[in-house]
Image 1 (cartoon, helix red, strand yellow):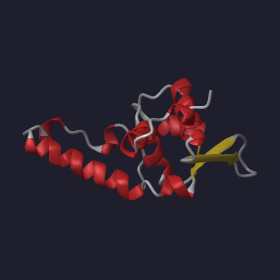
Image 2 (cartoon, helix red, strand yellow; image 1 turned 135 degrees about the vertical axis):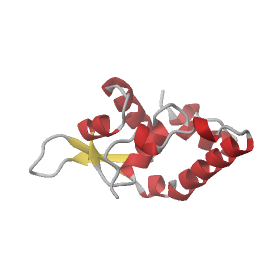
Image 3 (cartoon, rainbow, N blue to C red; image 1 turned 30 degrees about the vertical axis):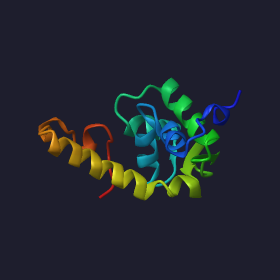
Length: 125
């Protein structure tokens, strides 16, 4: 059974279903920097196992958020990239980050927030 067939019918629940999971939003965020090979994603996202990373990438691919293709000639393997549908998440993820900060501020929990660099390594300047 395809993952897409298991998504809820309500649009808000569908959107949350596509992005739900511990790593999906972070994977999309890292891919916004450009295409990455599986091993590069594994190195950039602290704490994700290869097994879980591949599962999450497959789910994102099935949802049309991520595509894959053979890597550049000089490197072997597959690289993952955001599709146009995945790119359309850029302002949504930015809004979610801003709302997360707002939420923490309102509940006086800003000190519990982590910088992105705590999980995502080597962020381009």
